[in-house]
Length: 173
Image 1: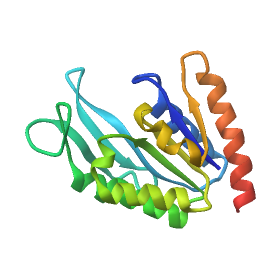
Image 2 (image 1 turned 180 degrees about the horizontal axis):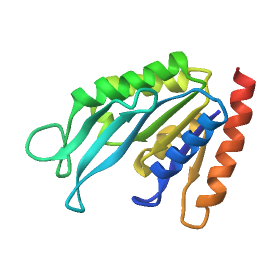
Image 3 (image 1 turned 180 degrees about the vertical axis):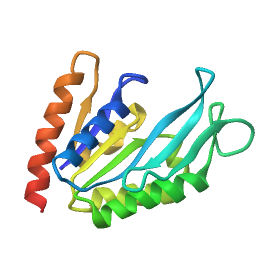
Image 4 (image 1 turned 90 degrees about the vertical axis):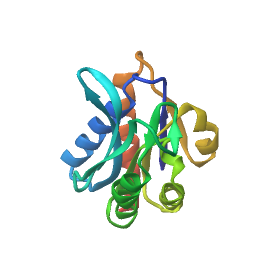
């Protein structure tokens, strides 16, 4: 089972992923993978960090500044993305019962190793829960179910995802 979540910026995709991951942990499932979260200074977003769900290791995914590769005003830190995020995805493919990837978007796809790790996750038999940027949805639609998160469906979406993943994990293990 592969579930892809998309939606507008700020709608709560990462929050949904984190709450779902926490609930799956409480239920005794081994989760792994990565999440990205905003870096803020003085109330303003200055970049993004990447965090491994299994080890809590963190790195800087992107930050405002000069350099390359760039996405808008952000410089993507390929080294930290691969050191933290890619390694977390690959560990999840080997060791977890469910793979979580937040987010699959333009910044992350600047890394060829990230692309390879996503492919490994999709090709594994393990359940996958991933946030996919709305511009990439069509690329992943053929691999699983795509849900669009909205303000109206946030509560029900988490319940639906938990139920679907729990059944899928139980079949896999």
